[in-house]
Image: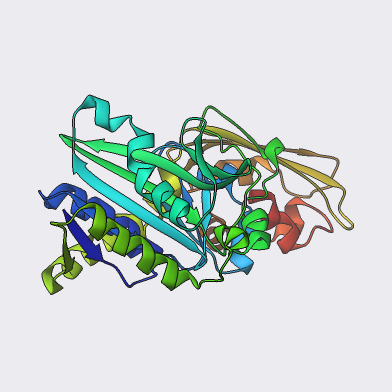
Amino acid sequence: MLIIKRDTTNPYFNLATEEYVLKNFSDDSFMLWRNQPSIIVGKHQNTLAEINLDYVNESHIKVVRRLSGGGAVFHDLGNINFTFIKQGDHDMTVDFRKFTEPILEVMLKLGINAKFEGRNDLTIDGLKFSGNAEHVYRDMVLHHGTLLFSAEMTDLSGALNVDPSKFSDKAVKSARSRVTNISSHMKVPMETLEFMELLSRHMHEKYPDALTMELSEQDHRNIEELVNTKYRTWEWNYGHSPDYNFRKKLKTELGGHIEMNMLVKNGLIIDAKIFGDFFNRNDTDELENMLKGMPHEGSVIRERFSGIEIGDYFEHVKDEEFFSLFV
């Protein structure tokens, strides 16, 4: 087994590294890594329906889609991620318990009564500290999980606080759980990096023939290319979302009520209808037709409408009020 050292906290690079190792390394491997504040959404999720976009933008939180299914999770430097990539058969690909055994063994060493519960969670006293997911590529299985060690719970709840009335879709929905940090249950305080080192030492004990390695300069160049062509792109992180209907109602300061309705496919607005009790000089059909074919991305919509006098379509409605209808 290879134990691959990872130092970067860039979530685009870290998620791309998983795919690169999965598809280009033949040896079994294990990795520990952390991300800057970010939201990692499951492969089959509607990204906009999982995140609080205003909060995410204001807090400069990166949003990245991963290869595996399951729900959205918040990462920060108090959250540790572990990845196993192994050759496997069918039985291994669905065995969440097997891949989480090393984590539970370390918790036992620390005197913490952690358990495997449900389909893919690790808990302490009924509170979740780890969620897990898998992705199969040919004869390889990628298993990765989160370990809440000293995560900022306020950011976690704020970043994933979504108004469910905006979206109607068949995408996989995240299930919110009561969570806890590992550090809260430790008898002797420990820093996040110390805990990661403890996990790494345990893996060497469990796999005596394991070799520690670092990615080469060529590996880094290849991963950066994957970042730029996939993991940093709007198309992968937002446009890859399943089809959905979007609706948002707004009571403006002076212009009355406006309701925006959109049908979105592959991230593009296919149809749009605007309702409300506003007054207008120009017909809103013009705006509805302009929206068709645009990405459901606030910055793009704002740019394309930069030459439009919003007040001609919605009397006494401010530009910021109108653009808030799309998030």
